Length: 272
Image (cartoon, rainbow, N blue to C red; front, side):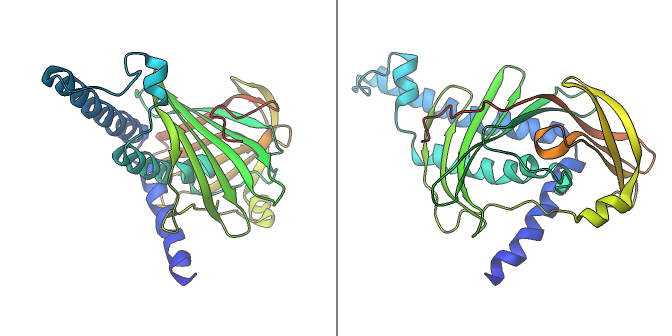
């Protein structure tokens, strides 16, 4: 357990640095890693066809191809990507300040914007509580028309993932091996007293999901320059309607506004 306590702050710091560098790195990571993997698989299929070697049965159809068991390289890629993205999805800005839990079936969709980069749309959905108290969640995101989806079973008591399913932008999906080396970083939850002390007022704020009466919370930026800001409303799952990160000159690094929310989320990957 000692090594886990050391690992958690390191991962949080890496996640925040990723956010500070802007969404362009986030976007490039998603595009390059998955597409390179898919491209290699396609090249292997072409080489197989040219050599006259038999291909897997049913590989001529997109639906059947998507059902084919992913190879170990795909598994390793997808779990590495999940372990980078989950801290961002579960705690935008590196911290959780919502003070309002999700209920089973509830989801939120945020649009992340940084400068002139293409927006990244990210969904977080609480799907189900199992009989033994574990939790199924979905994290998915879209860049342009390319989408990736994960469904993860978390053990909140032990703060670890125990199952993981995924689908990439080409529809390739499958169960990903989860081992004792696979880590999940729970959100660093700011205390209610700290949130109260950082609340500078109440404002009406409009997002693509609607207009909300929200508490405006402002903390000094992690690097000592700029601010980390949240607008909080108990009317939405998770309690957050907008995030904003600025640099020392008040220049926006990134912002994330609530685009949609609801209470009818179900599994998309036949996870349970």
